[in-house]
Image 1 (tube, rainbow, N blue to C red):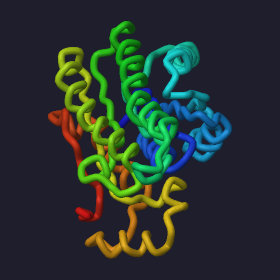
Image 2: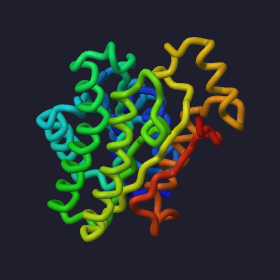
Image 3: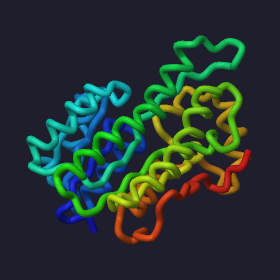
Image 4: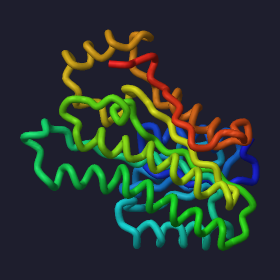
Amino acid sequence: MFSGRIALVTGGGGGIGRAVCRILARDGAQVIAADLDSRAAEDTVNSMINPNTHLALGMNVADKASVEAGIKSALEALRAPPSLVANAAGITRDNFLLQMDQAAFSDVLDVNLKGTFLVTQAAVMALVEHGGEHGAVVNVSSISGKIGNMGQVNYAASKAGVIALTKTAAAELAKVGVRVNCVVPGFTETPMVETVPDKVRNMLIKLTPLRRFAQPEEVAEVMAFLLSDKSSFMTGASVEVTGGLAM
């Protein structure tokens, strides 16, 4: 499905990002696994089919220079820019609004929202500059970005911003042949939710009609669909993968 395509996946060192890397590689893509933790990115590459054909990169998505250096390194190594981008890098710094400090608020927006902007901008610019014919971007939002979640004012705000960024980028980038969509996951079995107390976890499961959290692969399969030509007339869409969770 992705034979001959190069894919950049941020947050590729774990969670949904790692699952996306593995699925894209399984389906024929040459994958760049980018993560702030370069060793985790290398572990992802080593776990993928045909590991020697893929690339692990250290990248801080919140830093423009780091993003641009990563794109440049990928170009030098693979001789072509990525035409597929999965923005899966994300962090949480949970606290209630009245107890949250400015740094916790800013850090989450820097990674989750600004990082999505910086990577999309740099990757699409490289694709256009090197004559790429078409591309696709898929961003990771969250159901928290649509309905809010107590203790996550920063995270919810960042993920709401990802939805708005997706719709705007889709309108602007259609003229250069790039589609932009996003997934809106519910609670997913990733390291990010490991700190959720059992009492809260059980409550969230009860609120989810499918009565469980998602597996990363279940979100990643939808992301792969949005990157593929099977979704060729979709752009600006936000696809919920929540097990029916509406909170």
